[in-house]
Every structure is written in structure tokens, then in C-alpha cells.
Image (cartoon, rainbow, N blue to C red; front, top):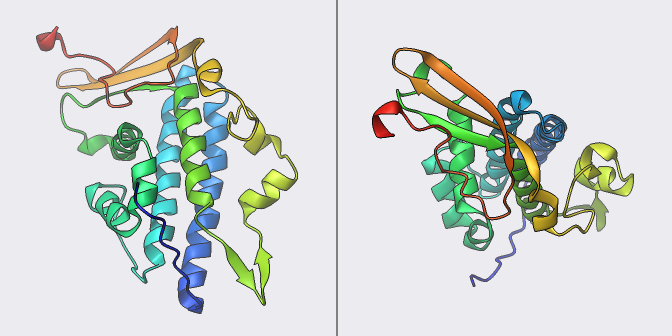
Length: 224
């Protein structure tokens, strides 16, 4: 296991950039949780897209620690930067979920999707992995002023046990992940078809705590 490297900065511009990314990331996180918590297939896509922008901003907060003002989106280049800069964190995260979030990020630009692009989204599976990922990242940051710890929005929501953060948060509630996820849930699946455009399907399925987030949502007729 890679050792955790402690990094410190007192550079005011760096600190301001990091805090800005963390605050915006947390707001996207809460918005994503709100949509995913409904466990409604027709809101799963929007919740997953917000989850991707949330993690993008969290990753940019990490990169800002080394003074990079990155314009990268949630793509392989940004992922590589995180892996190189904080290998311990990157290695603790679910690689298929990170790949899934990259695909979700592409969904912000429907007109650029390649033919055959497909994705499947089960709200509670995404919610559980998002909570795990954010918890891991939040714990990497600590700010102080004159030796006094400064609180994040995340800390304030935890202290107040705010329902927007706590509802169905298996980590904060101390729940078993398998029991939380493995029951009948709603699922959204889509494929970008050459002739029909965006094809969407909604159905009920059993959730899984060991899901492959990169499994195709729908398979083209030519491959069936």
C-alpha cells in the first residue's frame, strides 16, 4: 500500500483556489445526492452527471495543492494527474466508478456522443459509491487559522446531521453496504443510436455492492 504523503501550503492563492473548488464540489455533491436519493430512474441521469462534476471539482482541489491551475475536464489526463500526485488516494477508489463518472461527464454534451455510446445507472449504487469517494477525499483536507481548524461545509452538515448529507448515507449511518444496495431498485439505461438518436429504458432490477459501473447499459442490435 502506498504511503500517505502529507502536503502543506500557506500560499493564500492556493488556499483560496482549493477552498473554492471544495465548496463548489460539495454543493454539486449535495445536489447529486438529492436526485439519486429519490431512486427514480428518470432522475438517475441528472444525478450521475452532477456526481461527475462533483468529483471533477474535488480532483481539481487536489491538483491545486501543487499550484496547478488546470483547465482539464474529468478525463484521463486529470485522472493521471491525481494518480501521480496522490497514489494512495487514487488506489483506494473504485476504478470502474471513476471510469463511469468520465462517461457521465460526456453526457453533458449530447451532440458530441459517438454512435453506440451506452451507459447504465442504478441510483443507489451510484449514491453509495459517491458517498464513499467523497468521504475519502474530504478526509485528505484540513485547514487551520492560527492553529484553529476551519470547518468545511461537509463538517457543518455532519455536525448538524443535515438530512441532505445523511439520508441513505451508508458510511455516516454505519450501514453495511451490501444490505444498503442489494435490493430491488430502479435503473436507467441508454444508448446513442445512429438512426434513432438517444434511446432510453427504465426498469426495476436488483442492486449490487460489487457492480461493474462500466458494463454496457444497452447492447446494439448488431451485437445481440
